[in-house]
Image (cartoon, rainbow, N blue to C red; front, side, top):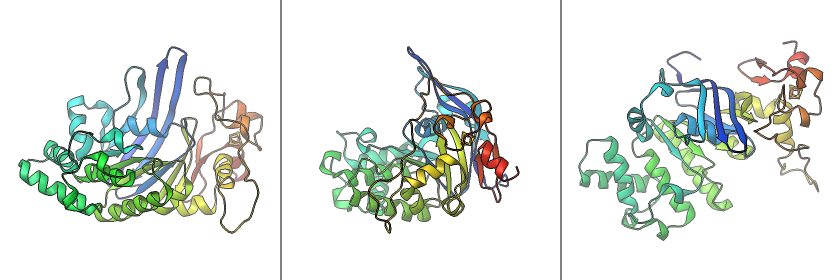
Length: 327
Ligand code: SF4
């Protein structure tokens, strides 16, 4: 990807949590790129390191116990890991905004929703209180909430509406990058579809780049252009959505697809990937997936597989698949 198209370039990022029980290897040598205007689905099971990666980009890893041990997070050509906390405060909200899973963790229960949006606007833009409140009303309308409800408190909204308010706060300063961490998980299914539809619309309207963290390949299919599959703190496959869905390469990605129900098939039981995610305090040597992998060979328990390009930027880290493709 050319330099001017590249917005985010995460290089060799390693993040640990030092706990009394031992060191949790949350993210290990992670590499990831995101182009301007692109949306990337970051997919994996709980504990794969998706949220830690996002918190790393926001520089919100709680320290202690968390620590960004090494790597670089290049955003618009500058390494975020070199920024002071003061500089990061300006970047958060204005350049990079994050939507969390549970809207109540982001909303202040004792403040009306228009004030919460206006606060974010005033923090980053030189506008008066009344202008900020007017813009807050505009943002509410944009996310499908009537202006008349601007003076309501969060508890007066349903879960889906609260998440709309959170989206309005996140987009209030027109960020260049929006990170959404399982934004629909806490909502029921019909509301999930509405919020996803809204995010799809807003993505086009704001032309922001987006990282959508999810364990749901269906959600990614709806919204994203690119997909990165994470396992045990690393990206194991990265491709355009079409390429990944038509031709998944990594055995873990294939396992994920097999465990998704197909609407045209009537099966009693879906195949699951045998075994569990490895303990992040005790990751296996070599490829972390090898204890669960049906095609593992001796080398898999010894050497970490390198990311290889299988064609047109479709990359995967797998010894056996690389050998089968003559790479
Ligand atoms: Fe399976 Fe080996 Fe590939 Fe890992 S490197 S996914 S263990 S075949």
